[in-house]
Image (cartoon, rainbow, N blue to C red; front, side, top):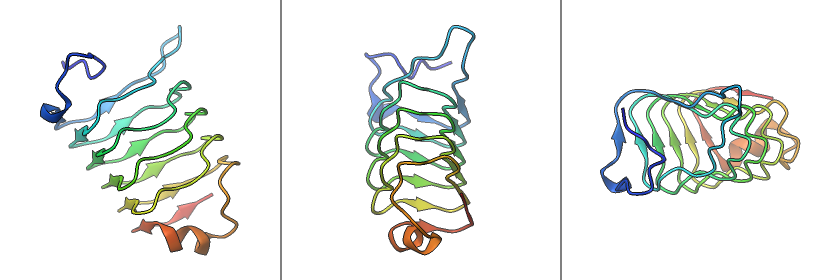
Length: 135
């Protein structure tokens, strides 16, 4: 098991082949930072990490990226690549989607009340999405 929150971890050497799942415990899950350059060969699940404000530069996810309920998340990094679907439901502080965002699967935006987009066309003009937009 790799402790991805260990400050002495060299992120340039961090590559996870399987899924990373950080689930909320009864006492709460306080993840507010992930290492730069993190690459995940499977899924990255960060459900309800309410103290997470942003994701690191260079983040690459081959599977799904699940950020549902990350209510303090303000931004996503430029050039974020998600090989599966991106779940942003209830990310109520998210104010924009970055240029260069690539999603091979679907994009879920239910409850993202701070995003400025009015139509699906507005989103597709700035984001490369292989699947559907659900909002």
